Structure formats: structure tokens, C-alpha cells
Image (cartoon, rainbow, N blue to C red):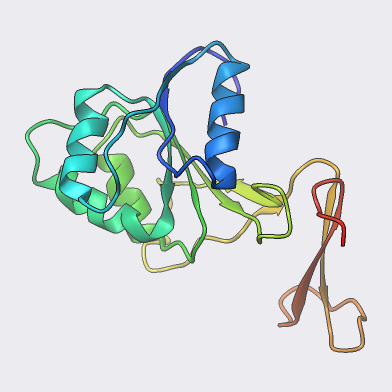
Length: 178
């Protein structure tokens, strides 16, 4: 996410057995960022949101399902987070809550990452434009990451044109074998 590779205060928010936690740790440690490992569980989102603000977290992964809840918490909070980048995904992402999250923090760079279980953390991603007027729209899964190909195929495994519904097939270095 961090194109400038400037060190940031990042947090591992996912359980350590989850692929995003490994990505969080390795990405941050290879850029010289500090890494906060002691955030409270997401079971109490008010406490979780307070800790992000209190610990001055600048970079974090947030599951799409909690983005609207955190945006509501920070909307009503006197203290706002200092987020500069947010990776999200793992579910359908609506534009309105992401825009709200950006408004209540430091207008962070927000990345929507997509990757099914059999792939490494993300197979595709997109930088979310929080300034667009697509308030009532879903955010797309973006373009394939490096060394990955994504295809939309029909039931006979024939490629489909853009805009036609089909099955998503992923190929490349990040796909698990077996």
C-alpha cells in the first residue's frame, strides 16, 4: 500500500493464524515500520476503535464488514484516528462507508483487496477513490496483482466479454497447488 515506503506505525489487527496478519507483519517489517501487536479483539469494536486512535495507528487492515461500524463510532467520537492507509476486503465493500471512514480519519489511501482462500492474501486490488460520487455503489475487486491473471469464464471455460456474469478463475504465482 505504502508507495513511498515511509515507515509508519502499523497494527496487526487479524488473528495471527490469518493470512492478512502475515502480510501485515512482513509488509511493515520490510519498510521499517513499527508494528503494534496488542490491539484488543474486534469483538468489542468501540474498544478496538479507541485503541486505534489511542495508539496512533497509521496503517491497518480492516475487514469490510466492520468499516461502516468503525465509521459510525469515529463520526461520534471527539478523538479521530490518524490513519494514512487502510487495507480492506474479505467481503463486498460499499462506497458510502469507505467514504465516511476516510472523512473521519486523515483521508487515508484505502485499498480494497480481493483474494479467495486458495490464493495468497490478495489476488487483486484497487485504490478506492473516496472523492467520487459513487456513494451508493459497490467497490470493484480491482486488477490482478503482479504475476496473477484473472479470467471470467462460462460453464464451458470459455472467456466472457466485459460486463457478462460468469465464474472467476485465478491463475499465477499466488495460487496454491493441489
